[in-house]
Picture (cartoon, rainbow, N blue to C red):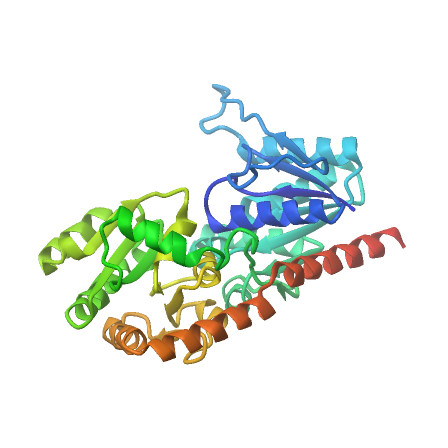
Length: 380
């Protein structure tokens, strides 16, 4: 198949998933065209089936803001015509789905438009009444729409009320990169780098440090844990809540037990070092970092927000607590880290479960089936 992919090329989850999807489709023999404002963050390997088309956003004085949407739509239409694309996969309802619909009209071709909803385009933008009609237009104008979790699927129908069926296709990770191989060796090396004791337990969180991530709950839960268990908290990332988190850490007097590591390109090594991964968000459509950490052997503690409880099976592959209930989170962590046999059995169940439900082969095949059905329908 000849497939176009448009996404934000940044380090966010949607860009990562779109990029990994394109790479694996190319590995399966499909011709993949990335049409983006820059080279996607995770696209670090050359492949004969992958083509990159960058949009040049001109800053004309007549425009108050650079016309990203129009320029992108025009570029997509050019690629559709030049390479005879059969399908374009847009990641995010606004602006990308709308750009795809416009590009299809510009090209005059019977190209199919697939839109994947990743979360922010619904859970945040969906509350902006000035954008609801645009989001609905993007969804209803697409030939097929997918959501990364059942929770996001439901939220879309509740907030946007589109006259369109939405298929849930979960996220996945690159198992060749995120896995348990050399975990103990990497774990030992990372602990030595940070002068962490061999028997000290490591709790971890990574995000963009926004308020909805509720990192203060993570810090408060850890404060309880460290009083009872020899442990360290590692926070990866940066963002608007960084200063308030630093202040809370100082207020609790746990500066020597918390590592603020900032942005890290090799986040896998931190996953390997950690025993427990914490994601206590207020909103979370799926939680890609959660799945990455689980593949590296870190047992998760998550909140009831969004799709987190679809990734974690409470009491089997990790624990789920109510949003804001950091005391229960601390209790679950202490229960897990004080019982080696419980930790090991939960870790084993976790690895088996995510390999069964979220393996890239399973997810990519679901997308392939969706594509083929659409392209087959358009050729009849």
